[in-house]
Amino acid sequence: MSDAGEKAGEEYWLAIIGGVRASLEAGFAQPLHIAVVGANGAVRVMRFSDTPREADLLAEHHESEGMAFPINIMITDARGRASLWFVEPSRPAQLELMH
Image (cartoon, rainbow, N blue to C red; front, side, top):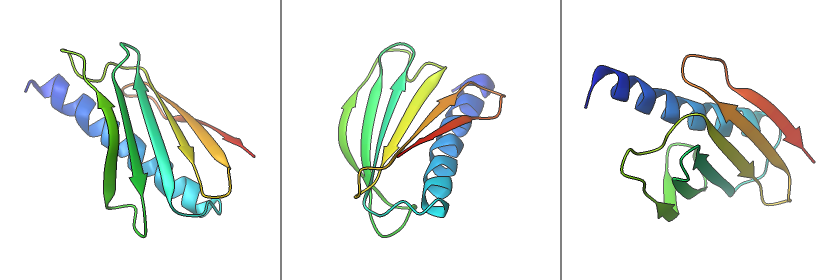
C-alpha cells in the first residue's frame, strides 16, 4: 500500500473511533450501529457492543479502489439517537448530532 493509501486508511479508522467515542460521551446507549459510505459507493456496516474496540461486521460492499473519500459515517444507538460525520482526508471531521 502507498504512503497516501496508508494515511487515508489510518484517517478512516481514526474517524470511526472518534465518532464512536464522541457518541458514547454524548450519552449514546450501546449497542451502536455504524454505517460508513464512501464517495464511490463502498459501504461497511458494523455493530459495536460493550467496548468501542470490538466490532461485528454486519454488511459490506467493496469497490476496487477501496473506500474513497469523502466518507459519511452514521452512528445510531439503542434508543434511536444518531450522529452523522462527514470526513475528508487531512481535515477535521464535521459532526451533526440528531435526536
